[in-house]
Image (tube, rainbow, N blue to C red):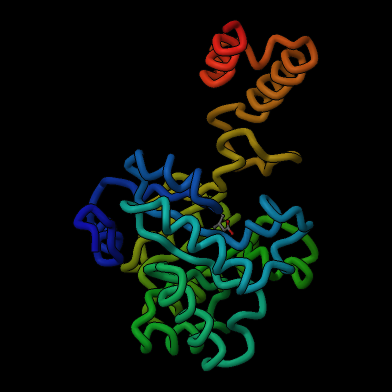
Length: 281
Ligand code: KIV
């Protein structure tokens, strides 16, 4: 393994460090290469791929085979950050055997170092089966997008006492099941702070406030490449969407105006010159 490659134990040690864990999603080789030039800790090939890159309305339709293609391509471009593959909907719900087989594919066929699984206490047994098979698991609780139909939408979770208590219990159960970190999505910041204080593994927040041990965002949201409106927790650090439109607009104008390709971007034929010389004799 590359000596700069971040590992699961390195991420776990950050629980005892003041240096926050910084994570982003990526879905392809070209963005993975760019992220690889930064000091990012974790790249997650999220099932958000379904919405961001494949144009689905939810994360539910993306399949194992589609995810494998994207994890492989990210792996080819990424040599430093820990590579985590998201288990898509229905790739782990059926049985321990199904979950181990699919998580194993991410490790064996696609080069992931760990997988992420959505769900709390109910999923703890399944997660234990994975960690017993030496497959590192990142948990994901709070707002779990694969439960969108059950939740009736993407709403902040844990706002009342009963729900908050359940989410805390989910975190404890995941810790017992052996996860190496827990994504806390869409929960109040004080609840995320309490969970972070209580569990021994790092928490990674998305819409869960500043007290988590790290943060994750969807890359396209951060870069301003998202198509629709973003949730409140998204901070846009660039507006590449506007840049893309500007660049493509200029290209269209220059092609139509015959300013492109110019001399600098065209080849000259030597044989053509020779032919003209011999023609002259
Ligand atoms: O699929 C995803 O991108 C995620 C993260 C944003 C946590 O699950």
